[in-house]
Amino acid sequence: MASTDLPMRAHRLKDKQLQVTLARPADAGTTYSTDIDLGAIASVGSNISPGGRFADCELLIEGAAIAATLLPTGATIKFSILSATADPTTFDGSDTVEAADIVTLTGDGNEIPAQNIRYRLYSNFPRYVGIKVVAADGTGTNTVGDISGTNWTISVVT
Image (cartoon, rainbow, N blue to C red; front, side, top):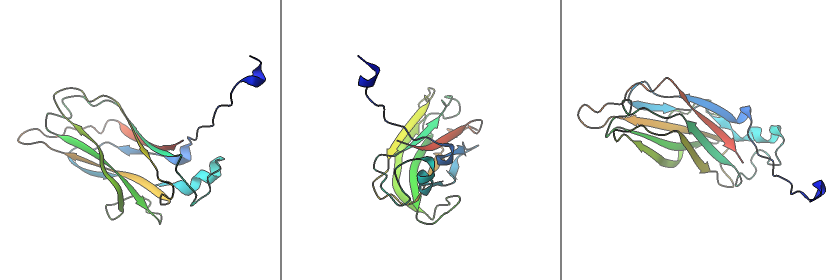
């Protein structure tokens, strides 16, 4: 096969402008990410303009494994997708919940494997996107341990 016969590979969008980190909680509670400005997509060479269609984009949440002792049996970590039409800088709970509890990690006495959570953005998704993470204790003495040693990375990818 001649080199001109090779199929063109689609360009994949992943840029530091479209990536934020969220510290894992030190205890049970709720944490919010800063926003990702989907309007910035136009400035990274994509053919998607601000306010354009995001049907080919996904929100990717990546995180390292969590030791069994840090998420004991019955304790949970839940992820929700948030949006805003005006720049919230940091989400705070007053924003729109696009998808509640898209993934729930539940302690079962074993290590929770590394996570790669994907959420497809719909075509007219609001300009700003972020996540909410709720770490909740189980019953009795099953409390969430300090998992703040690493972060979750949230990015927009195609």
